[in-house]
Every structure is written in structure tokens, then in C-alpha cells.
Amino acid sequence: MRYFIKLAYNGTPYHGWQYQPNAVSVQEILNNALSVILNTEINAMGAGRTDTGVHAREMFAHFDYEQTIDSQKLVHKLNSYLPKDIAIYDIISVANEAHCRFDATKRTYQYHINTVKDVFLDRQSWFLKQKLDIGLMNQASQILFNHINFQCFSKVNTDVNTFDCTIFEAEWQEKGSNLVFTISANRFLRNMVRAIVGTMVNVGMNKISLEDFENIIKSKSRDKAGTSVPAHGLYLTKIVYPYLE
Image (tube, rainbow, N blue to C red; front, side):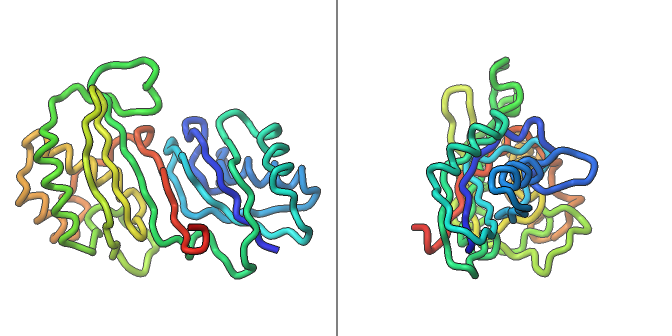
């Protein structure tokens, strides 16, 4: 039987979601907890990869287990066993062919910038004291909807069949001293959101124009886009599946 597991984590102490032989990952910690509690080896597959230091307010993984699971009891046991920076919200029985990565129809990320130094946001938001033109950055957000190929915002030498992504939402919001960029798409390339934000920050600082921003996308060259902003300001916030609506 196949089960989806809905979870969240603070990515600060982890080297991303995916298992790594020489570093601690969220996937490793979760697999270990499931294996101990269910008394059999469990290998959970994640809905995607988050990089070192990136957070997830909503993440999904799936795993197979031969017996029927009492979801409430397993959620309670996992939350008691797991470290305080990983939380389990739900265990959901799904069809055996359901796949948490390939079946997702929409993913949403948020990037947080703090314009005033705040010691409580040190690892949860990027502190940037320079003044940004949010109006210009939102105009740049609208340009994203004119394109589907975002190779310029992808890590180089990444193993993908296509650089095409469909953007559903892209908007900056100003909340006091906090700036939040929300972006939704059917899929994301590795490092894509952090590279988009880095390039938009250049727009907001008037280092590049809106025309430059669009030309960067058309160039398909990572070298022309802005630098990747720090990982600790990035959150995976929502994953949508047609059968979990």
C-alpha cells in the first residue's frame, strides 16, 4: 500500500531534502524515523529537492508499507520521535500508482526579505538594507508570464529534459519591513526561485531595466542573470495534487 506523508521542516540544520552520504538531510532523518517505528526499512520519496538551508512549510513524500496504517497514531509517534525542526501533519492512503513528485500539478514558493535587522529572523529571512523599488519588481514579475523557458535561472549542468515551466502566480508584497515574493508554477528548475529573486533585486535597485530583465530570460544564459540569493529566505509553501483537493 502507498501512503503520502505531509510534513514541514526548518531547513537550517539540514543539507537539503535529499539523502547525501556525507551530510545530514531531511530525507535521511524521516526514513530513519519511519523505519524504526514501522519496524521495517522505509525509503520515502520526496515531492522535490530543496537545497541546503531551504525551509518547507508544506512538503509531501510517499512510501510503501504492506499493512494498514492508523494515521493519527503514526503522526503522533513520528512527531514524538523526530527532532523539533521536522513536523508531521498527516499520513494519507493513496492509490498504489500515486507519485508525490510526478503527480503534483502546482508548487508554490515564497522568498522573504527583511529590510530591518531582526535577530529573530536571522536564519528565516534575508536581511537586505538597500532600498528596493517594489513597483518595478512587480512589473518584472509580470514579464515572467510571457515566457516558458527559464534556462537562464537554472543551475548549469543540471540533468533535465526541458527548461520549460508554466508560471501561475508571481507577486511581491510589502508587509512593514518584510518583503515577500510568492511564485507558483507547474514545476521549478534547480535554483530557479533564488536566481529569479536575485535578478529581480537588481531590477529593484535600478541596476538593470525591465527590458534587460526580459532579455536575460530570452538569452537562456545563467551568466547573464543575477546571483542566487541566500537559501535561508526561501520556503516551499504549497504542493497541489488533483486527488487531494
